[in-house]
Length: 186
Image (cartoon, rainbow, N blue to C red; front, side, top):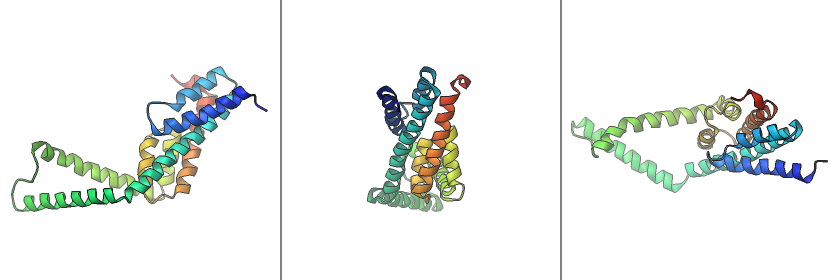
């Protein structure tokens, strides 16, 4: 039976994991490495698993927030406004006129079109059979960033169950490796 201090460290891993899941300013990896260099490997691994659970809880919050926002009335109005602006731009270009908007807005239009294609590709990837693999890779390696993947997955067709399982597995792999081999880090 672990002592109270060990239980506290493991519980703190859960909290640090959950908080760091929603903010990039608190890296949970530092906590796990700190445990690994100051405590036994059993305590470090237990803290790493707790941190993985906390991270998964936080990422599920982001996932469900994105899923709810994707069907919100506000976003639907924003899409309608964007579609209206796109129609006005297309009509102006077809008529040989200057599209509406100032010079900055006109200069940023290609960037907006590129971002729209990238977003659509990310959502399509996560909606398909490779989606859980992308979440697993992101959770284990950190590329692409899991913070972004959680939002994209929430707007995709990926099931919550698939997201939870792959996120938890990926984060557990990452943090247990960090807990067991801190000397490999630069």
